[in-house]
Image (cartoon, rainbow, N blue to C red; front, side):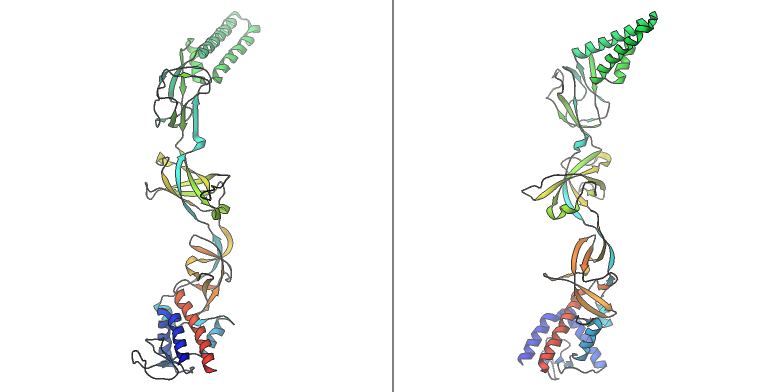
Length: 425
């Protein structure tokens, strides 16, 4: 009775709901085709009941049926492979529990990194508007932060005594060239034209446009103020002072900062175990809760040289093509980065792997209806697939559903064999 109790306890833990169904299937088969058995008897409704002689179940009073052991398990093990715990499962079990198999393939495993990013202006698109001469702002066409501007748009007008003097010198040089040309002084005209070119170059150095120089030549009149134009399109993100009109300028003083919005950056945090996969130039995909269903393409353009000592993460900047200017700084976005995959490795769907804590297993089907659990060494996982470094070869068939039931049946058969051998001795 002590052996019976121990055996029943082991079966109760190993069997479970799926294994119970297998026993029902096996019991029906044993009634149809009598076979040798070890002398153990069980109840089809209560498989935890194990007796060494026929009779009735003490729980439901059903007639006990023989429990197949002995030669049958040995044959199943030999089919699955020498020394490997295998089990043959009836076609009814496979049909009722929808056991599905897949083939291990050789291919690529993409590494997926999903994180959240905070948007900011593209630092490469930020330009500073300043002057190379001293003066005073007399009129401002753009006055507040956040105002959109386009390249070539007038920003403000500056009165500068230096620019007035430079214009006078240019006009004087032009007049000198015209006078010498009219007098036929060809020997002196070339020198006069050199002076004119130098006066025009000085205006260009002070950011007077070609159109401004041409207008000055046509009109022959010195302009009191010079207009400063936007060097690029974007929005004003910084302005010098509350009021621009009347402000005195010094060379190099930044009056405006303009940031382009055609592209924008997302700052994301990369964890230490992901750093080896991330490189500048890799592509990314961005989505925003504000615009469901819209995806923006992106590219990693910068990686911080230092890991954040508090978060143990590395900051990466992803440049995004901001279609329609919908994305705005300080928004949160979802960022998905797919670094280059591990190529030429054995892969299976991630769902086929059984994780037991210390080991990882797959259930292999060496031949139709025969299954065996096999320990495997895993590698990278991504795109719903798992890399198998050892324990499985490309082309082998593995179970993609009902693995727990088959694994429980395998463990049960092994336990039955050991207990039967001990009981017979």
